[in-house]
Length: 133
Image 1 (spheres, one colour):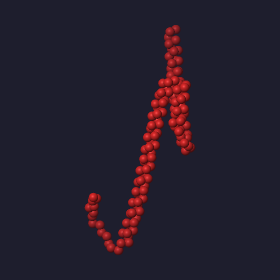
Image 2: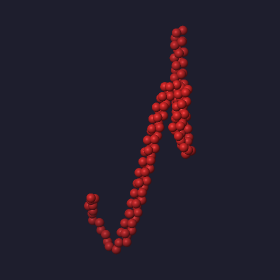
Image 3: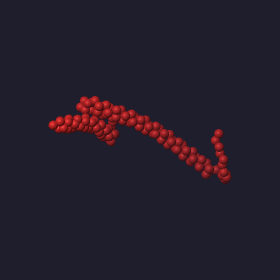
Image 4: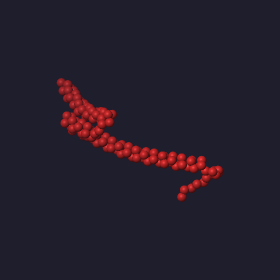
């Protein structure tokens, strides 16, 4: 009889654990799916708002521990997302700079090629040992 009471208690604890952390997992998944859906349709995607709603639901229905776990995960995800956004801006700026530099190079090359073609004198290049100062 003691074994059956212990087994029931462990079963209830396991079900409670599964239900609480399952709710946290479902909340995270729901917030992520909403974020991806908004991103797919090019809408504003406030992951922070979705995450806070999911955190509140987790704290309310699943208790403190799963809520804290989810809160830590959400803070980490928000930090990663902001870091990625900053890096994307830096890459876009560098790409724009390189594109402008390449375009300037092409214009100068075209100008020098035109001058070379119009030059009445013959030009022979034997070797160059150019150094920058």
